[in-house]
Length: 447
Image (cartoon, rainbow, N blue to C red; front, top):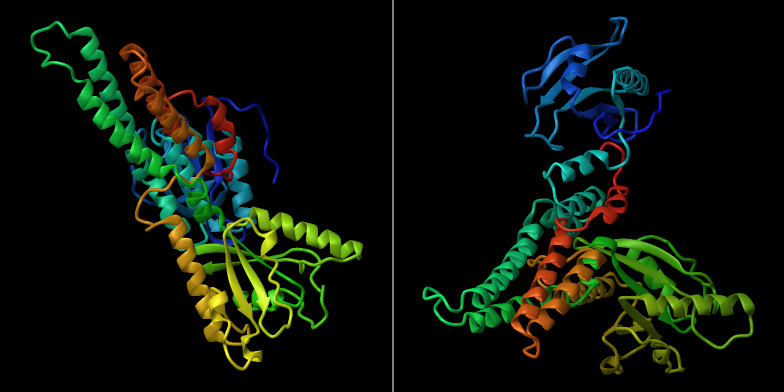
């Protein structure tokens, strides 16, 4: 397929294949821009009725039929981008799609869309804000139920409503302070409003503080909960990884030091992505390759959300390498099937055998409890990106300054303006141009 490339222009009509890899049963090609109606008349002969799927013959410039398929027309501004939009639903063969895309490129001011360009036009035309755009990107990438839920809270505007509500409360507090300053001598101003403002502002500060308390909560849902399996050699790390994954990921032998590099696999735990890492056994060694594996293991431990610190119950050496762990961990006794009595249970969060399905299920339950304790109930809206956390914490800093009684009312009111600007920047109402390229580059072409 050869399409003529030219410099993108803001007023161009854009088009792109919006469905997955070809061949497929049905391929959807989207258009958006001021020339959509002209393109539809040229390609289909007539303009379909708005929002009504019409079966049309789609023709090339010579009048030859490319395909017969459904064509939909969405007049702006009531469309995804706010512009006139259209969709071609055609058979998903490579030849049909290539021919149709080539035909569309022949039309004046009509070109292939860039990555994320449909969504960017929706943002620029006020159809979506930045938080909704990021939620849409996360929804497209969602693989688990919890990822889908979090993405939907952003994509459908619930997160925006919360952040915008906080911003409106800041604006209200600032307005009350300025009214106190400007109209304190007027008869219809019932005394100082400042005490009411500070009480409202303190409650608002607490809400924002709770949302930004743990910067990893939202990222854990979106990117996964990192669990590192660590311990001495032959503690059963690789066997446990295989048991949790339900397949042979790591090589298991009775020789110490079998695992040299970090092995990683993902599991879906009640809708949460858990990224499991099997690491080299931690011990003193002169072997250079094993030393490098241990160095990588220690580095991965420091990056973990949780460490499963394994100790072989059947071993005479009672050393679990706890001194190497500075992040949250669970102490796990392994090879419980090789001991006669579980007399050491008070030393461990869990004792198990990787050979027993019931023990692995108990570990999965313990992991799920740990994740939920870290994230919370799951009902509240959780900031999902570092950018969100940064804006919220910046707003908190300004609110703290506004609550400082050492400053005059004029200065405290200006701090409230800066705090509301931080929340405006979060949802895309203030100073967002530098963010746009990065955000929209995350989208595929056609979205």
